[in-house]
Image (tube, one colour):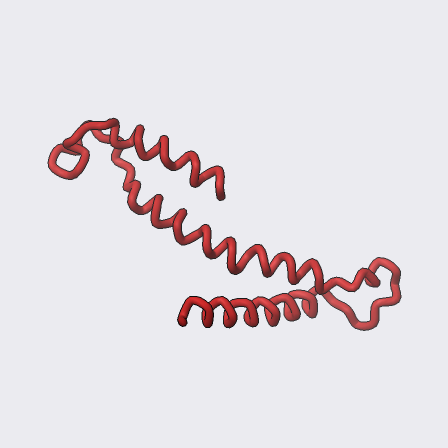
Length: 102
């Protein structure tokens, strides 16, 4: 995701080619890509990745008690791990929501 963010700048420059007409009145020789949409997608993916996917994967990893491979785990299933990870993730989302709300 960070690589896509870095590589989006040269794509934006190459798409507009430095021509003043690419701003809207003479777009025949421009790249034709809607770069505003690309930037919006990247700018929305960064916080989603940061606040949702990274903590969820961390909580899923930590939900494993390490006893599944030893055969001594009592009733531990992958579905229970994902439920526990989602429970902690909801807690994180509420805390971050409260921080940004106030």
